[in-house]
Every structure is written in C-alpha cells, then in structure tokens.
Image 1: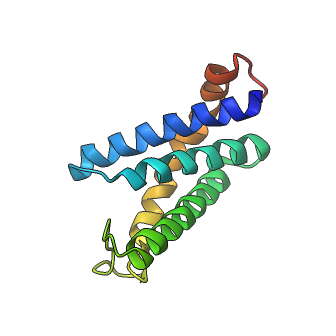
Image 2: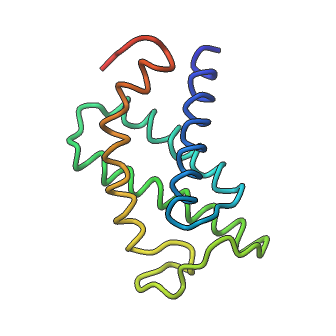
Length: 132
C-alpha cells in the first residue's frame, strides 16, 4: 500500500508539472496531458530508481524514449482513434503519424535531466527516506 501511495504522489506531481510546463510554453493544455504527464513521471521515477547505476546520458536517453512512447500511445488513442486533435506534429520533419517527432524526442531528452537529478529529492519527499 505504501508503494501505491508513493506512485500516486509521483503521478500527481508529474501531472501538475507537465500541464504547468505546457501552459507556460504553449498557452494551454488538455486534460489528457494531465494523465500523460503523471504516467511519464511514475515510469521515469521507478525506472531511474531501478537503474540507478546508469549514466546520466543513458538515463536521459531512456527517459526520452519512454516519454516518446507514452506520447505516441496517447496520440494514437486520443488523436487518431477518438479524433480529438489534441496535437498534430505532422508539419514537423521526422514525425511518426503526426503523433511524435524527432524534435520533441530530443526535447524529452533534456527534460529528463532535471527528473534524473531530482529523483533523490522526490523519493525523500514522498517516503521520507533516501535509498540511492
């Protein structure tokens, strides 16, 4: 039960942070991004804690791939299946079905840096202990 509560707290932090970043840079967000941001941080948090021996570069590369995968999955469901048009990257070069693109995958790499660097703090904040 303790791990479930920990993951819910991490989810809420990721959801709020992602929506805040999107509003800051884009001017608006969509409720599905709340879910995507929360899911991404939960996956990154648990992955980075599990693979703590990896270098910063490898963690960020893994982070960018994880975020891109989540973005593609959400895009496929909400943009393609439900036709909600939450975003469209088809005008970017090197995109896949307009749902993900190389530019944003690179941005997710750099967004992973503060996540990697804050994992210790996040863990301490939600569990009151440090295991790294």
